[in-house]
Length: 124
Image (cartoon, rainbow, N blue to C red; front, side, top):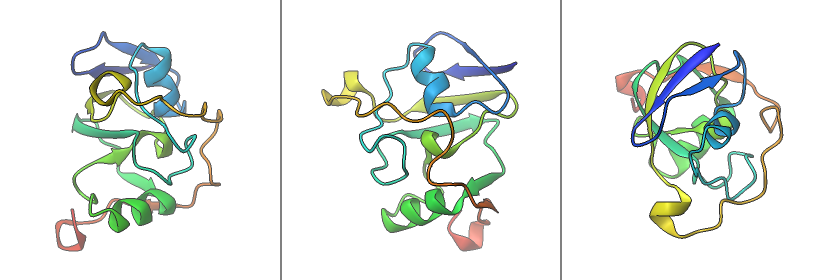
């Protein structure tokens, strides 16, 4: 099991490999996922203080780059729980008043193509 500490919420236990957005929601975090977890809207953003995964999907990298958020946030819909994490949910139902969105699928969509996190020189 993976331990997830979320600022302002209780600690969450997640299964190794579980999609982070689903673990957060199951654990009581009212995280947004307006596009249904397809890396299109960036509403499921989180900020890591510890345990940030060292890889990301190409879809996440491209969307964060497009929105000018690369190095500032990660998309919980594109992250598998692997190792303990400490993070803050950046957009929630409670902070925005928005509806969460369509329920994300159990596995990452679109089909993940994994890359390493960018370096400082590359926008990180």
